Image (tube, rainbow, N blue to C red):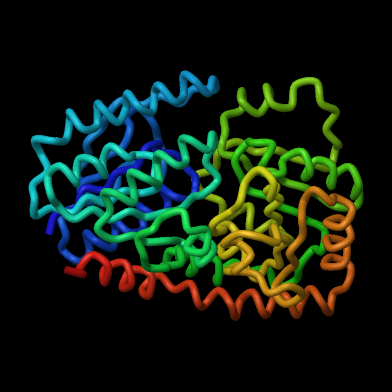
Length: 357
């Protein structure tokens, strides 16, 4: 079996990290794996041992009109570049709905097309309708990362819910480096540098709680960070980090991990940072909606809260860090729950989808 796995933007965010995990599993199972993504960028899809690479042109633009044009042009270049390479017996694996040219290409050739759906918050609405329409028309099989995505009815085609999982190597490092005695004062958030990810709310929390230390790790460069916070008066108890290839040190430092995505602007369909935090025995606070909410039992391994109500989040944060008996209970429950996100089970479920006729 030969798989051509397509992803648009190779970076250090969640969806390419999941594809890297899959690619390693495929290669270990003797499957020939080809990674097809944009060139000129470092990310989780770079230098996977045993994988072959094909690059096409794509550039992200801040201007929405230009960004849409670049997306369309990139997919045309993808089709032109790959049409002579892919055969009918190959599998086309489309990671997220963005590289839609891969779905069209697979449909033209007549090979199996598997879509791995990670997202639902796509704007404008007409683009979302277009991308999911292409996916619905071209997909042979669909994998959703949460039940929330299935319930959204974004596609008519039924699919398989396969939760993302922790890499075995990550879990091993986490188990070996869990805090034996929490500091009860260190607050961490790892996210993209976007307002809808709750970056501003995180800063507000830091201003409210001078007694705690806050770290914000964003998938962005130092220059992008400086531009975003230009003219803002940041509190002394917050430290901001650019893109981190290795986040273990951050989790080893943290006592609570937050995801403050605004439900009115962005719905998290999963939450890889949540299960990474739980591997370290760290309680979490997450949005009350989306796939991420499926990972947290309120009051058990964390809390669910709408980040638009900063005062409520502030109250829950203080409750976790002040009430040590509650903290230790949540810590134990997080460690217990993370066992559900086993890499071997994840890879087996994914392989089962590949082998469907």
